[in-house]
Length: 374
Ligand code: NAP
Ligand code: GDD
Image (cartoon, rainbow, N blue to C red; front, side):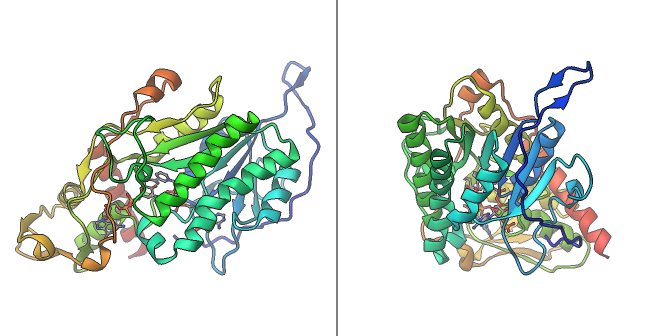
C-alpha cells in the first residue's frame, strides 16, 4: 500500500507531563500516552484510530523506508507544526535498541503496544534470522528499556495463534500447549515467554494477546484473504486473469481487525495483567474463503481435480484459480480455531463481525480500489 503523502517525521522533543485545564476550570489529568510499534501495519492503523478517539496522545514508531510506508495512517496524520497534535510519528526500529530506548525515554508512554513484526509466516522461512531479530528480540528490547528506565507503563505483546501450530486440542485456549511450526512462530514464542517472564520477575504489567487471524480491507496484499479478495475484484473488472494459491485445505479462525484492536486496549485496562485468546470460535478453509469472495463478484466457483491439479472454474467455464506449489510451506499449520470465553468473561469482549460480513467488506473495498484506479 503506497502512500502519496510524505509524512514529516520530526525528531522527538521531550515534553513535560503538563496538566491541561478541565472544562470546569480545575486541573485535568494529562491525556494518556500510548506508544505503538507497527503503527504503519494493519493493526497499528486501527489501534491508532481507536486510541485517538479515546483521547490518547499516540506516538507511532515508523521504520525508515526508501518509499512511503504510511499509506494506512495518512488519513489520521497530524502536522507536527499545528498546536495540540495528538499523533506523532518517530523513526525507530525494533532491531535497534538505542532507538527504542530514546523513544521510551522522551515520550514516556503509559501504554506500549508492541505490534511491530516481520509478520509473514511463509517469508519467515526465507529470512529466519531477521524474523527472530524483529519479531522475537524486538519484545525484549522494549521490556529491557522499560525496566532500565523504571518506566511504569503497561505493555501489550502481539502474540499469535501460530504459537499453537500443530494444535493439541480444538478449540485452542490459553492453556493449550504451544507447538510452533515456523521461524515466525518460534520467534513469537520467545516474545510470549519474555513478556510473561517480565511480568512475573519484575512485576511489570505485561500481557500477551493471543490473537487468531484477523483481516480487513487494510490487510497486506500477500496474506491469503486479501490476496483472494483483491484477485476476485481485479478478475471481475478484467484486470487479472487468474489467481494462484497454495494450500486450499488450511482452516483458520478469521475475524475483523477493528474488533481485535479493541481487545488489545481492554487487556491493558484490566485490573490485573493476564494473557488472553482473541478469536471468533468459527473456522473456515481457504477454499471456502475463495468461494465466498468470487461469489461476491458474481463469479461462483466450482472445483475440479485434486491436490496440485485442483482448479477453480468460473460460471462460463473459465479457469480462475490454480494451485502453485510455490505457496506451500515447509511446515503447515492446518487448523486453527480459538476459544475466546476468558476474554468474554473477564474483558467483556466479543467479536462483532461474521465471516460472511468480513469477506463481503473486503471484496467491496477491493472493487472500489480497482474502480478508483481505472
Ligand atoms: P503487519 O500489517 O505486517 O504490520 C507489521 C508492522 O510492523 C508494520 O508497521 C511494519 O512496518 C512493522 N515493522 C516491521 N519490521 C519492523 C522493525 N524492524 N521495526 C519496527 N517496526 C517494524 O502486521 P499486522 O497484521 O498489523 O499484525 C500486527 C502484529 O500482530 C504483528 O506483530 C503480527 O505478527 C501480530 N499478529 C497478527 C495477526 C493477524 O492476523 N493480523 C494475528 C496474530 C498476531 P512497515 O509498514 O514499514 O513494514
Ligand atoms: N499467504 C498465503 N498465500 N497463504 C496461502 C496461500 C497463498 O497464496 N494459499 C494458501 N494459503 C494458506 C497458508 O498456507 C495458510 O495455511 C493460510 O492460507 C493462511 O495464510 P496467511 O494468510 O499467510 O496467514 P497465516 O495464518 O500464515 O499467518 C497470519 O495469521 C497469524 C495468526 O494465526 C499472519 O497474520 C501472522 O502474522 C499471524 O500471527
